Amino acid sequence: MPANLQAIIQNMLDISTIDPTRYVAPFQQTRWIVGSSLFFIVPCIYGYQKEQYILSFFSLLTTICSINFWRDATYSWRRSADCIIAKLTLSIYMIKGFSYVVWPPFVVTGYSALAGIIYCYYMSNKHGDTELWWKYHMMFHLLIVYNQMIGIKSIADANADYDEICSSNKL
View (cartoon, rainbow, N blue to C red):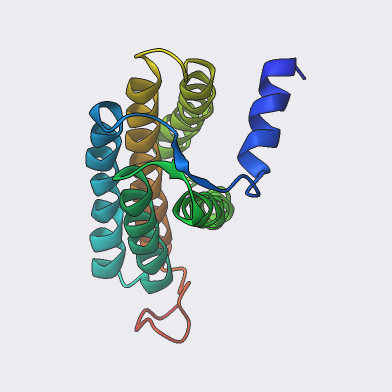
């Protein structure tokens, strides 16, 4: 594994750096990330409409935590909360996506978007000290929203009854 990638992964998993006086980036850059975080509300609403309440809930939680962090992006508890919720939501969607996304056009575009997600996340960290980082991070958010949407659609189409208690879907 390249040294840069290993450092990025270690940094991503490290939630112990709390310093609310130190900024991740200036608001002139993070305001765009606040905007792209709003797009997470789209799969939240779509998941609710498709009676995928748990996925909808995690999309809403991700939206709230992401906006809350990026509005004042310091190394604080808000950053830790955003990182933890984002990783948890990513894990849930990936497991469900790998299980239910089977329609060939969704498989091709979904895996392509996953490659783009990994690339954009890596590049946003690699270019953290330039003006490019937030553009990569915005694209990262948009690709995640796309994959969430096809995941929700695939689960709903499979009539997967993911929310056994909360959903009225029947097998």
